[in-house]
Length: 522
Image (tube, rainbow, N blue to C red):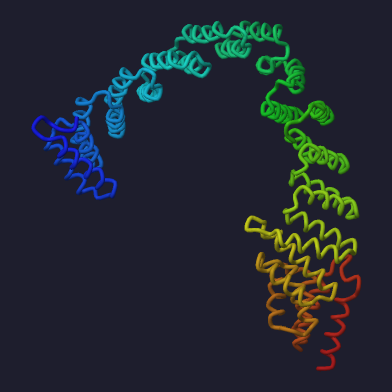
């Protein structure tokens, strides 16, 4: 009703609509004054009382706001919005008892509103009022029907009330309603176990398995029972049955294997036996590659032969050919054996599934370079560079450009070399090998020797015992005719030479030239 007996409906409606319009335009002061004018025109208009109450609550004058909201509800008791707002205000004021009263009133008008019942359940839970919680759950159950989640919650509440008989009755009632659901009986067995009633639990689990031998839930419950009793052999026998049971949930299977491997390892378990269990599970159809990945990781951990580990990663890829991690693991193990055409083919195969992975182009380019296929390597690395994004590991991006620069230099494309090195240093300004090579090639050309000296010095600062880096720095000093300084660093380079370094005599040649210049100078 929009007007009183003494005021025309049209006048009230005009001011009310204008108030709402001002509120929508965020002209809150004007809206508030207009709502108050509406109230003056008709104090019994529920919408005017509600709007003013909301303004007072927004102004943190809660007591005034609540008074107007209660008046609005009194005038229009069937309006759920008024009641919900009042209840939320009470909750904000930490007045849960008053909020509960409002929700109880709302539920009386609409018993099917389970959202109100859930609010009440939350309030009574905070107040630890267990009888009222049970009453609310009964009312929810009346609307939604008997469910496992409701029964479990009622059992939990009765357990907190030390009413174990009541908890048993709740579960038995659910079992009676669903006599063919074996998992509910397993739940009963677990409840017996938690109550310390081991014989009843064992009987229940065995009864389920006699009716449904492949019930995975019963198998797992019985396995846990045997483990708790220290009967490890029987538990392990059941574990095999669970792992190969098609009805076992994939996540449960994975967790069971993981737990069993950890337990077996802690007891000094037999690695061969563990691998046999993995193989038995992997003989089944696999929805994911998780178990195969776990097997490969276990072989890595136990340092099995490289051929076995490589086969394990191939098994992963047979299930999930797009698995980048497995591809890289396989390539790295092949790499440690021999960097040959097999590695190149594996990298190319990997790129068929993952064509935008820069690291794969890096390994492919490096393998091609090692096998003297420089032009192929350049093409691969350029494709890898074109796939670098903001998410790419910066060290990998730097490695791609650093290697590309090295290969350009071998091909006599010196300007491309410098461009690639510059890109490398954008991603990793401290890429030591790039700094050294860049500096050395500049010195060979006699260009930008000061720039070369700075880069080379950064390299020897990062690795002061590298004969190669010390030689580069000495050679740059030599090019600048600073022969005594060059002598000091070339001597350090020779002192730090390791077996297999300077096979081509380059460092020795630099030392000879430096010494010769010093003799001439003297």
